[in-house]
Length: 524
Image (tube, rainbow, N blue to C red):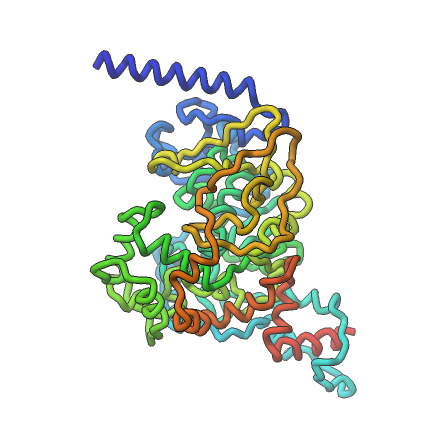
């Protein structure tokens, strides 16, 4: 007991010395979120009682473990934290469901998920508006080659967005399920300061975007694994009240953004990360999926793809486990390999998305999406340590900010250190996001040394990884399974800048192009 006490005292003295040393060597432009964390220190603050789960607040900081949360000192005593004023706090108040509302939501989600796939109208808001627009007889020519005023068309992109009437699972389904049947809006996250709604897609960088969201409202442990952090639910679209959801979808000041990834790369990444045991995901993760989908051994990649390619006629029940849970790329599929176009209403309301980007150009296009306030105030100060590798659950849960000294350069959100290999972007499980040679890192944010080269949380890979797993037949299967994703991906993969959803809708669908011409000419 005496030896243990002495050891703890030495450890505490070491931590105090480290914190003192860190305080002496902090960069002058370091934000409050980047200051060193001591989870036992009273200045590692938590949100007021009405903003997060009571059970979390009753836990002592040093007992947080998986849900360890550390905010800037403002969170200690500011009742409106993390919002800017009481009105904003009230506006983003989370919806509370009683038993009757939960039952009604579950019925709606089950019914819509049971339809398996959306109709893919792509521009439902245009089609509805076109059908209600009275045209003069002289304006009856619907030629899609006729010139039209694109600026006039813009006004229709954010009108008549009715997610509860559309042939989609309604907002809120992810409150009932985080896996299959979690709905279209599961990973739509909100940045109120910039009026940006970002559509996160699993295996397309959603983890980093949730980390960035937490960074913007003062989470000093922003580099930690974010998915189990209760605070990140505060600005989830699915958690909002219905009237707020409708206002955001139909408010032209709110801009929507999404990034797509090559479906081949994404599916292989999901398999390596979630299904096949490896040094990054350990047996526990893979065993969960083996049990969930009734495999006695981890399936080969070929078996995995073949199972997803098997169409089903109904959603499997939520009870028990079975191979039929893996069949199909539909609403009931696990979000890690559900088609990207089933996210955030894209299949029906694509023109509502202002910025559609590609993982191939993640650096420059992220700066475009965050341009102005969000980049200047937060984006360029977001720093990740390329040498950091989590060691154990506690580190993943309670990761401190990176250690920075005066003169160190900040990397910036979704940016890469200048001295990292440029041949491919930071990705996961060795599956590279193929990066164009002219995609370069931005200038350093502050003067000083460049960050050291090293591995990000996920490893960098190469084309050979894809070639090792994919046969010509598997490639054909994936192109068929994700044919709707490829309709978008093939249009944006080589674009240097983000593309608007309205431009994509007109290229993908003849009906959307005709509706666009009809609306723009009818508005003149």
